[in-house]
Length: 281
Image (cartoon, rainbow, N blue to C red):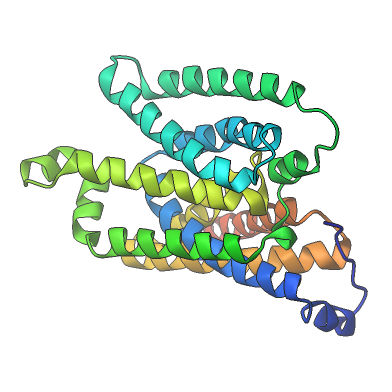
């Protein structure tokens, strides 16, 4: 979908009255909260490369959707879910380092995705929009899926927050205390894979990992208290997503990269402020 440039506040207000823009704002809020919530655990559990691998391997699901003339979103959901579970299974069942397993599986999936992409004939608009993201193109189905994943993630993580924190900080102690570590790990991977799938349409395969990692990293710089860190991550994710859409409209930039660019600027600002405060102290 074509991007819309605005030159003044009145044009921006007019733009916000369009249904597609309202859906984009709603999607930005939902995905910002989801990215901030899951991203907090992703960064603390050092799973950023895992989410990166799932996001990039989703190219296979996108290509399959285009080839089969199906909505790529419906191919992304099962593919990312299966891919995430398979990768975690390989990590558990081999003696190889986790980054080695991720690199191997990611390389294989990317190779398959590139080959499938080369088989696509004619118009590739659906493929390009998923690769680079277009939050202005999300529809009601995407909003419902995002809401369902957000509700599932919130219930799963917040209802077992004490266990999740212990599992994050010390898995060995969590296992000794009788916490079903494997069940929680696989449950989190399911949610993370689904979150990557629903966020891809907004920010694209190439940038989806930043959507999870940057807000949580900003929050981690601002606070080491877990509850405050979790809240700040959600706030940064939500506000930066909305700001990214506004930047996209003001400067006629692509929506996905605009969101990630805003998050990157926020990170640099927070990092600079923290360094200055440390030197002042």
